[in-house]
Length: 179
Image (tube, rainbow, N blue to C red; front, side, top):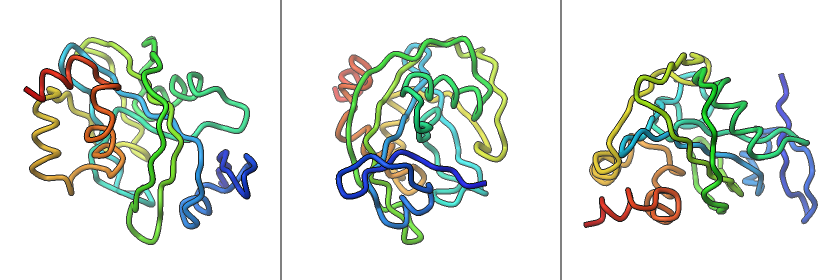
């Protein structure tokens, strides 16, 4: 199945095949979601069958919106598709852009809408094994420490979010972990 994502080609937003966007490092739209329970973040470990960054830990879910899909609708859809989560209300936290080598000659050059949703640790989660091999609640301060100590276990975009945008995304959690 060919997946088309919104990418900029010669300055114009155009539907582009997802793998082509990553091979060429084209700037494209994306959505990332963090589900929180107090100071804990629901993390996912990417499935081994993913064509880039397999087996790495990352935010609760992330994806590319469909052509006519709003970022919020995309966030809600992917929470359900990746980890079976419904009934949470993602709140827009940040709009950012980054570029990162994700290995295998692939580049993520994303314009990302980042969302945060509140939930309880007993949230029902059902991993789509084509997308996610595991999930785990991690205290924010522990996540920061783990990323600092073993960055190779985490996706490049998660490292960028925490390093460059932590306070904007996580607010008081980021401030508390910095002290």
